[in-house]
Amino acid sequence: MRNSIVPFLVIFLFLGCSVSSKDKILFVTSNQHTYGNTNLKTANHFAEIVLAYDVFIKSGYQVDFVSPEGGEIPIGYINNSNPIQKKYLDDVNFMNLLKNTYTPEAINAKDYKAVYYSGGGAAMFGVPENKAIQGISRKIYENTGIVSAICHGTAGIVNLKLTNGKYLYAEKEVNGFADAFENKNKAYYKTFPFSIEEAITKNGGDFTYSKKGWDNHYIVDGRLVTGQDPTASVSVAQQVVAILKKTSNK
Image (cartoon, rainbow, N blue to C red; front, side, top):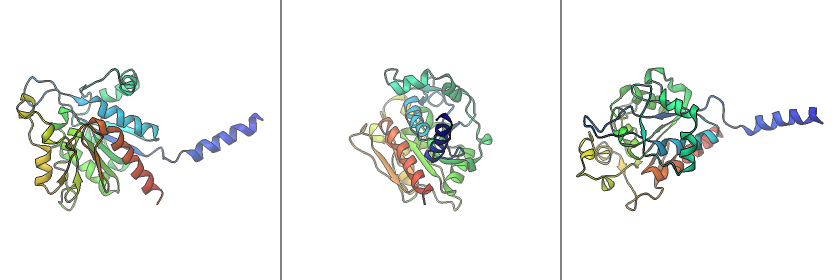
């Protein structure tokens, strides 16, 4: 009986795994600790990282992290009462990933099916102007991959152009943290190098958003998936997985 069960289990596990061990998602994060050159602290949004990470891992994908400088990244906006956030806060292996992010130079774009730009105030600095990260995302997208972003993470694609010189999001519907929800009179906002909404619109993108906000609003336009705020983190990741599964079955 034992000999007949083991082969069956092996076959079942093999057939049930539709995702290749080489199928990977690249998370783009920031090394920025402060808002601009001020002493105001900022960070990468922990929920936007772990909620999406959890979806990708459970869907069978491997996730790598990259940042402009590599190494440790600051995390914040943490809710210890959220079970998924607490789970990963207590996961030494996961936290080590955030302490040892890759440099752009260590990344081979051919290894990834999608890129995910997480947010938080830190996302406004270091990432948007990084040519190496832009190059990685461009290669992933032009290799039929997916570009996705959440909240202020959309800042990371503002300068992203295709090989033909056209902005990746030109003539596409794009979502992100809208100006309507920013506290423009606050010191933090005055450090921002640009308005995500204005930059996307200026460069030919169709920036739209939910006026209600914090309501799991996201947009899928082809292979570009963007979410408005942390409440859409899970949905953005789920949409990326859905597109990947659909294209892999063609």
